[in-house]
Image 1 (cartoon, helix red, strand yellow):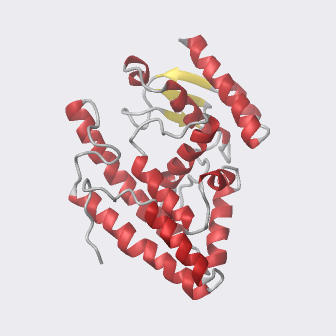
Image 2: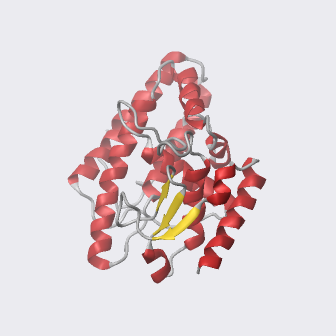
Image 3: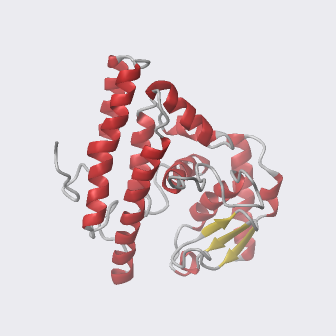
Length: 266
């Protein structure tokens, strides 16, 4: 197994270099340990302080997508902004209003599909977060490939600047915290279903939908996104025609189109 894990890591290093350019030196010495993440017993994780990837034992014992997990976690290691000192990676940054974790996971999974030349994601856990991340970027007029251009050490800053240019204000805390609320609550729903049945029966959103999750979804869909649209309209940098196209694309990307989740209409 150790040889297999090393082969996957080497494949990641090659693919990442081809897609993003030179890979930081510390990525070559990243260790992969078969254990649950110290911060979350249910999952794998990347430790950017100690340069370790924790591969949850279930990934192996339940024949899950090992390649996906390693590529995803290696992306966190690659994008560590202060490697060896903290966990700040990609869009993740512990700041006054939140962390950016949810947006970071969405962007990372989108990048991973390109690195692995896939159309499907490795698991359903982040499917809702990915869809909402795509909706956010649709307001910038960005598709999946263009989202990968934010997978740099300065990507978070670029995201903030790009939105400020079209909205006139920094909307990162508004978008990030509302997305995080959906993400955190939804993950708890998914975990309850997984603990009870050992699998998720209804993808992408599962069968358990707590009131807390529903409220977070309603806030994101009916308050936060419309508020950002209002800012963009007021700024006037984006033409009405272009903004309408972006809003149409945003709606097409909604994960709430099936009877699985029914949100109140305004």
